[in-house]
Length: 329
Image 1: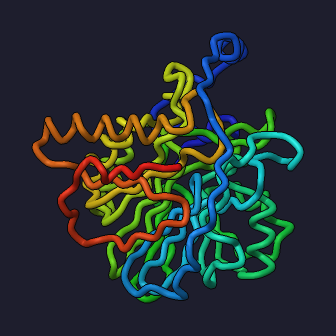
Image 2: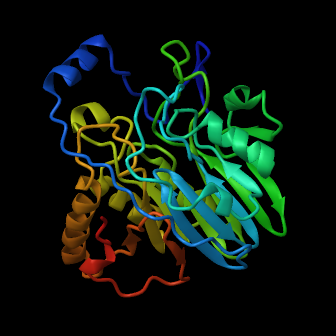
């Protein structure tokens, strides 16, 4: 399935109605924003130079360092203070990055899911271009945002793959979301997830997405991932957010639909993008895991890592308990 364009704008796998002015007015009128706080935490330790098997380190929001089959890969890297076209306004970082930029190992590859400011950060991409010069994989049309940088950017359609050498491949997958960096370019670039496959198995990075049939299709086409990086934040109010973001319970459903051995939570706790409180995503995920374990008789291996925490992903999910959803500062 290739992405569909109508009138120069990409369409979701399941047709959705974009929020109009009346929806936005209702959202602003009915907002019930819950508390957030600034958390100042020391960065995690400097990562290893290379990892032969599979390790993931949570940096913050949708930024994860994937070290797999000798490759060092960043997803949606954001080290800037704000997710915004300017650093004087816009959503401010409420937690520092879990890894200092200066401590990054050599970055070979960057996976960009789409062009929203909390996922494609010009300042960070410029720093990566000058210090690491990684290969960049992203969706159709996104390269124009990076044209001024000295980067090798490859645009992909849904289900298009590229060879990374050594038996490794990356595949751009569908997502249920949208794109745009101004009021005038909505859906003119393609959004999606990315699957990184090789001898160590498959790491699936979902990017931003609502629920939809694409999770089951990823499993059918690419096999069950060894680990899935799944978003759990920016879901309230549900009437406004559910067309573009999964809730924690829906992320757990996605974990099962993918058949993932393990999953790691992303897209929460760093930038205040919706009405839930800073701690609500992991609390709601913990409740969903409890209910799911009662229904299935086994606990899903779905983890919340602290910023800067590295995890060597097992090939087989181990026994889990309630403390698997780690408490955060």
